[in-house]
Image (cartoon, rainbow, N blue to C red; front, side, top):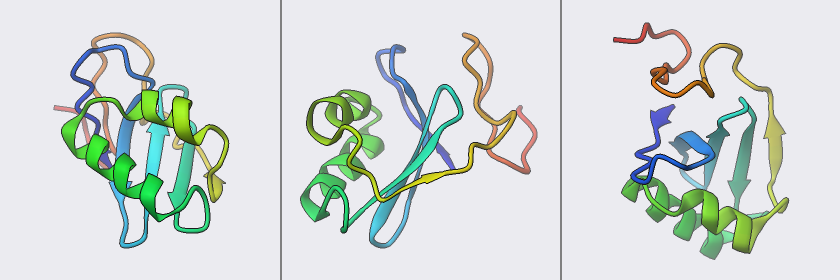
Length: 97
């Protein structure tokens, strides 16, 4: 999982995985969701992928245009996503620097 840029420091998104036809997004509470062609659709996924790469506007976009329209809620990854400011995001299987 790639760390989200979070340029403003206020985002609820902490990480993402870009898949061939979908994007998986991890949120500060540990929740992970898969968004794809079935839901919310190709156009939304393209917009979400662009915002993920930029590190800006992804949580706002989801809140305003996507909401609960996701393909699948995935299992949370315990210990990999922290809500505490200053804590380093560490993908599973990796040790924080």
